[in-house]
Image (cartoon, rainbow, N blue to C red; front, side, top):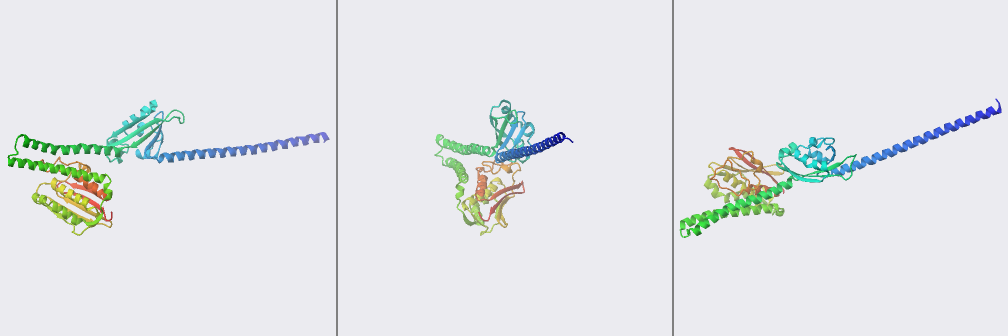
Amino acid sequence: MTAFAITATLAALILLVALVSSKVRHARFAKKMKSQVLELTRLCQGETEQARDERNLLLDALGDAFILVNSEGVIRFANSAAHQLFGNRELNGRHIREAFPDPRLIDSILPCINTGEPVRSELVLPQQSSPLGDSENRGINAWRVDAARLPNALRGGSTTRVIIRDLTAEHQTEQIRKDFVANASHELRTPLAIINGYLENLIEDDMVSDRDIARHYLGIMRKHADRISRIVEDMLVISRLESGEASTLKLEPFFVGSCVNDVLERLESVIRNQGADVQNLLPAKGPLIHGDRFYWTQVFFNLIENALKQNPHPGLRVEVGCEETADTYRVWVSDNGIGIPSDDLPHIFRRFYRVEKHHSQREIKGTGLGLSIVKRAIEAHGATIQVTSTPGQETRFLIAMPKKS
């Protein structure tokens, strides 16, 4: 082999080695770049997932239902409150017409989706149309729907955020206030009208000189004046219980049996005239509880008086008894009267609510506030009350009171 051939061969070998080395370096560089790209992608994905998790955590912390809806009306995001509101049904990817049970909810959102104009409306729905479905047990329920288009579109197109807030408690409180004012006005107007009517007869018809007629009229007027006083007194008791004054209850130990005996002494003439049999099965020195005796006297007075007024017929038997558990006294007031219809049971603790459909007109009407006072006084002591009734057999009010309040 000539020197030239050897030189050419060596040059070729050197070139080949250089090419191989270059390819190796390029492969290493490409591998390094690929690794860096993968790492950067992983970091970006991690940061995106973290941002999404933080967003979801923040939105899930909201007490109100929060929903994102695209321009087609399809739900793209719903927080945990929204899922709970709609019975934990799957919402993402569903059209609002499929997700929302009542068309009034849908109709309150669509104008914002279609036009972009903010919408804020309040809906009052019957129990069967509540978003809560079968778990709704509050009767009439109220909701505020607040919808607005987001300023920046997500994934193209427009996105509308929807907030649904439960206003049922506020609505019911306002309704109770309106009913209370209306009912109180009605309850006071009736006896005042009667008193004014008899006063007019006494004065204008000059009947004051007729002692018998005057005494008769004055007796009727006194009866209705007493009714007004009772209504005002009951309203003041409820006001004290609901205004926070009940938090300053004068708690002291006393015997429930002795408290019931005091009530029976106050009602002795009514019990005797009615021919009722009222039994206090509690011992005079038991059970011993810590509470405000004034309010507990109100509780037992109203429960026993209510049994007497609702059952004016002879043969009524009323019992007050008690059983003891490890940490609770369970005191009941029961009677064998005409009972309470099942449809009325959920409402009897409402102010001015009366069960009158099966009662005669000769019965003495109460103020309609007695059982409301009972419930609020009992709850102020951390106790509870339940009522069961089998018409014609037994109506029982059961109070569960803690041994230590």
